[in-house]
Image (cartoon, rainbow, N blue to C red; front, side, top):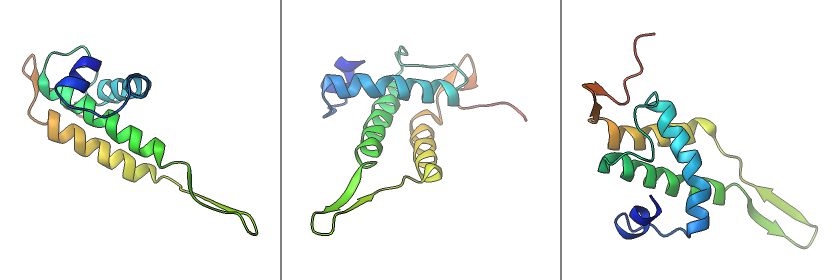
Length: 114
């Protein structure tokens, strides 16, 4: 998957950064596809989806820290993530790449009737 990320998808993360986030991206894909696809899939849509989720997770983690720091009268401001916003963006990524992907005649995002 790293080779695909660097050479085909043209991702910019280091191997270490990519590998760290690949596990999280894979768990997200498996969760929303009911384990129908994962990082081992040969489908380009799945590979591209994982790559974009990895890139997005990197941005989220990078922005979780300090947003500003002041030395005089010492003050630090931290960014608070909005989980609903993060989940919405991830669902958008999944929908874009996997909305028309079927495995064994079933859409990979189909979660069944509740």
